Length: 580
Image (cartoon, rainbow, N blue to C red; front, side, top):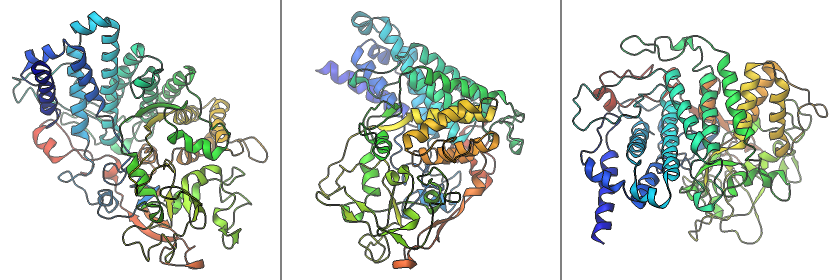
């Protein structure tokens, strides 16, 4: 018992030591003791499990992450939550919300330490052999690459630490590191994903291993990384010409390289060629159930990587109607609502089916004849809802001023836009009884890979037919007509790129993609500013009026989060992100 306690204490000590400060911190000086820990199987596996704990849980999009609530997808009802500070532009290097740089470097350092010390683990070698050690190292390598990717998508170019641990007796000068260029970061991270993929299992077939790294996950994140690297923000972005290290080194490529799109396309095709994943379809083939099931059906055929432990119950509570036991405050913006297609596969601007004013069977015409993904994602006034504490008949949704879930009787718990999100919300979750539906938080799925592939092909040019095929596979599962059928023309060239972007906005809505997409495309200034919803201060026809409900602040500095002033004060070679 004392021996077990000692091992547990040592692991806790090491993790606590690594969980503070930043990438400049040294490794623990109790090396010999921790090396003894790495001679045992269970403590080593516990250490690896801790490295997984840094995988982000993005279910909290108001106080923990801003990727959905600070872009043209949703408005969060409560000004007390941190995302509001971004909405109004109230952030600086001295008080930067959602600061994750330090956290991910803790994960990177833990992964590196694990990889450097797990070899020669006597107990694993005796029980399982070298193969298991190699797999564990590949998992740590995947996680390290993932955390680097999470850093550069939020902060731009980062500091690459490599495989060498910083000595415990390192001098202050030895601790100074400069940022690598974005292209250097991409090359390193892509190679790490590729190396991990060589060893990892293609998929995890046993339930106990769900949530662990696989070849499919490593290749899929590599493909996403390369797609980002090919995009305008990073590929020949002359607006960032002054973004340099102190020695003058350029951090963002100034020369456009078309071949980066081909590399991204090839990487996505590698994932597809595994033939290990399929777009999820409900057994009924119903497109609404199929689309909802992508996020609600645990470990389904489409899911490539997800986080087992998460707070999705919190997403359910915050999205659900007040009258159904929820908090009624995660509200899609009108801009998001208007971008869903009609059931004929056309936009509301193009479709003869679309009209406003008046009702059909009690539903305002704006919401009639929309595509299945709209009904699987958006809760709107006049529809019905069954979930939460409702156990019998569905209730009518009333989000107008005097309605059951409207502003008049809601205190702070009311939708500011007249809509609520139901995508990813489990009908089995019930806040009043304290129950919630357990499922993984999906971080990578095949639907995204198809769209990544289609976008990279379309941008590179020369194979629009292949790009259109994968775009149409997404539309087929969505239950809307494919391009080239009926009176839907076949888009090519620039028109195809725009349709892929539109499809991506809808298919991946509320999944933490839009914030990064509009930045890498350099179109943020066209979608920030005034955000709209229905008039929640009105009843009857007054409710159905587009109204400005917020103004999302935007300036050029917001392309990347700032490095904390704390990091700048310690890192003498670091340069701050432009505009901060």
